[in-house]
Amino acid sequence: MRSRKIISFFSLFTFIFPIIAQAAEFDYNNIVSDEEAQNYKAMSQMEIKTFLKEQNSYLANFFYSGNNPGPNESSDDPEVEFIKTRSATEIIYNAAQEAKINPQFLLVMLQKEQSLIEDSDPDERQLNYAMGYYCFDGQPCNPRFKGFGKQVRSTALQFRWYLDNIDDYTYQPGKSSCIDDGTPDLPCSSAGVEIKPENTITAALYVYTPHIHGNKLFATIWDRYGFGGTATGDDNSFNGIFPDGALVKANGGDGTIFLISNQEKRPFGSTTALVSRYDPNKVLTVDAQELEKYSEGLVIEFPNYSVLQAPSGDRYLLDNLEKRLIVSDEAFRQLGYNPAEILGVTQADIDAYIDGEDLAEGNPSPFEQLMRDTSTNGIYYVKNDTKAPIIDPEILASYSDLKIIDASPADLEQYRKISAARLKDGTLIKMVDDPRVYVISNGERRLIEDEKTFLTLGYSWNQIRQVSERVLRLHEIGQTLFVE
Image (cartoon, rainbow, N blue to C red):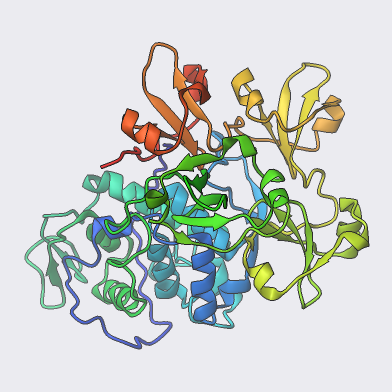
């Protein structure tokens, strides 16, 4: 995983909203546990959206346009930007996944710093400096980090850095220091409070906000929202083993095919809804009891790339599990659809899909495709305004459902080059002379611990592809899959 280092102290004394409820007992030394703070699967993107709606938050319907790459979009060049229009929900979720930080933690930070969870009408400054990132006491905020997307992602990555490198900072677990004093050195003056963080995230919170008040506020909000121990993500109460992206049906069941997504099983409403998105040959027959561990999510009812019209009149293009707002009649015309193809649906149908990037006029490739550079024969995976080079035949085989289109260098210039394309989710891989088998899930490679786990997951040995080390290392290592 790429590391990001920003050496600085963050002093963010927030007076912009009252404390509505006090934390039951504020423990200066244990604000939240390391496990809770790093439970990055605690909320799905849909659950974040629902939470924001329940709080009547402005962020529930807020979109940000600017540099905000997704978890699998990165560049070694810090000057390379990924200009996207994304919903606040997606930005929060993406930041959590990239930094391996609990999205609940980020939601609390948004409320603590700028009241953005509960404010239904925030001003521009609240949005532009949503996390108080690079805003120091008595100084103007650094405009380099202006923008909702930058603030959320930078803060998530900053806390990831703290968690991995806390020994580089003044406040450390197991070390006594003074807070709210002129210096962290002991003994404290009458104005200061002695703290001794019991875990890494508590120390990190004091590095970010070196004040008792700000961290007590964090604890108050965390408790008020009921976050933490009963999270729905990777807590000990959930022991399902199927990776995200798996297509499964129960052995001896009624034949319903489900997609495993964010620890839910989402049924497909029709065969076309399935085959327009996934290869039906990858459906796994699994033990019914294992499948029963998953709660049933919303039905995937409509075929991919359907155009749905909400009761409000807004039109959306379905892009896998996302809905993309078509912003104008011209944008709709450029998609090449006949108005008769638009499906009028209910708001509940619309809400079954998470918000994706808006579709505006001039999008060069809203549909995924493969393009071959006629001057080099290099092949790219193209989507929207980006092109991802395909560096290996095994990766190309992963996109066998797409036709390769020849394109001139001039045609390809309109697309921004990003990092290499990865294998599709659900692909089983191993290297030659290495017995370890991995499955690709959410772009990561997850080790399948043993034969029992492999068979319980419903896989067949002939599905495994042998890949080079280069292809293997394109995919970050995820959590190991195992049957207890």
